Figure 1: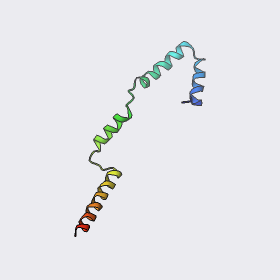
Figure 2: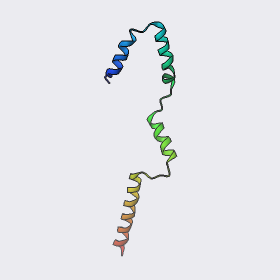
Figure 3: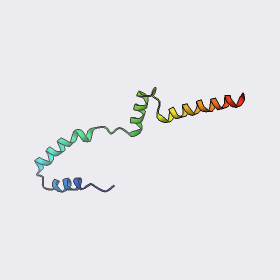
Figure 4: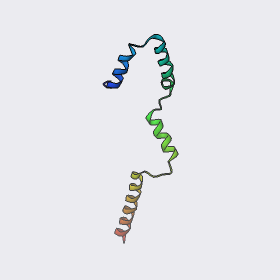
Length: 78
């Protein structure tokens, strides 16, 4: 993935920081760097678990389709 222009500018400016400024920057970035990146699958599982009782549009479609098929089956049997 190519680096953004903003990130390139930041990296260029880093070269001009003195040691104290670099230390301040590292301390400012530490909380963000330590933050846990949650894998997408885990996020999806959490959301699905929280909203498991809510039907998705595809589940609603499948339910409607199953009802239509059952209705057609009954009408063909008569």
